[in-house]
Image 1: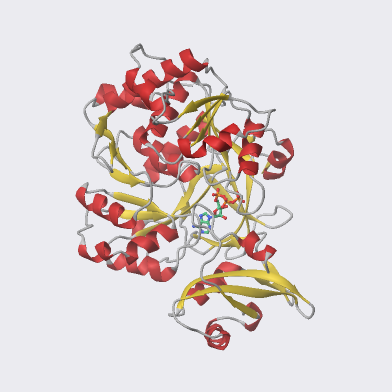
Image 2: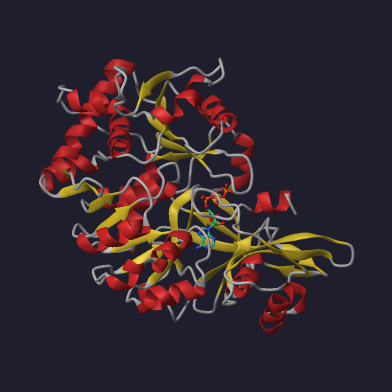
Length: 501
Ligand code: ATP
């Protein structure tokens, strides 16, 4: 493969342009700084911990600037980063560490006990991520002090893994998706191409680094393009809006929950956000009312669709279609083939609902140490997404739901996202989730979980549904809750609802 050294290129082309800015402290790092830090990080990890090509390095930490430097340092060694969700329990972390068997784990003070209690069979070297009160050395300090400045050349093979990302487990136990250099490269090309990212673009990044959103959706396409990212440790609606205005950010990325929280902030109406060309939103369906709220502010929502195992950026809607094709995820990105197929793998026609399958160079390599799951997911070069979609007469795609969430009531298919959109359109409903539950008469019926904004009865909701939905789609039970169980990316955990249904 050609030299994939984006940092080296940009430190040569425009060494002084800002690659990354710390949104909390205002500290800026140019492409020359970034390149130097990545090399220093590689030197110290190699010398102190003997990290080499193919070694795994796990990270148990919240989003920190050093995380970005670490990722680019590990690439120079050909090592594989394993970001671990810091909210996981000991049992779940044990699974990931045992499965990925890292040579080193970097951890923050808050997760010291988890690292201490890893099973005897999985005992990586340990390194504190940032300075603490103790005299113990940390990655951040070592990085600052590192004096070795010679460059590492950086010519990976396409099939070399760059990261193992454990999928969030909305639907089952976490599996480690292997992202290799080919995938990283083509996703960045595809994203910059389709989203028209140029060197003068900038964005605020805040999505967690243990999801693909933080890295592949945001960081790498911008770094590949020599553009600027403003880094935030965590999501804060007011701060993101303020930074977007102050930094004249041009593109915003988010998931429906973060977009909703921003739209509710007083800063949403008071600030001038006219520098934002558009916002890309994915991960789950965006409520249509919310798309309109952002559009009224002059920021078109380009609904996107993606998944850890492919891309992750797969679809996006053109900004001029934000309202005309509201609810659509648009077209597949440039170097992606997409088909809609039935259960026998036959391609379906216009407006027929079937499984979305994908082919292209940004397909994951497979699941780490899980050949069975890999073979179930990738067949003859096509990745089976498990998502149900349809394509309209103009070729625009719509996500209809997840295959495993669909249920059949009296012989008719019910797709929960459609019912949820209708429930959410009631003015007194804040959030809604629908699952199928067994029923003696109909086989399965819908059960809705509602977070009300104001007091509301099941009868009110039933009446609202009757005006908008065929009877077989209307939930037979309504459960009112203070909040819905959610994963870290804001997605409703339907399996938790089903377990307690
Ligand atoms: P799992 O743990 O089963 O892999 P996940 O939600 O944790 O699920 P991710 O890779 O984080 O896995 O998310 C990918 C999934 O998110 C897609 O397969 C799809 O179901 C859903 N998704 C992504 N974008 C959209 C969208 N715009 N509309 C509806 N669903 C979406």
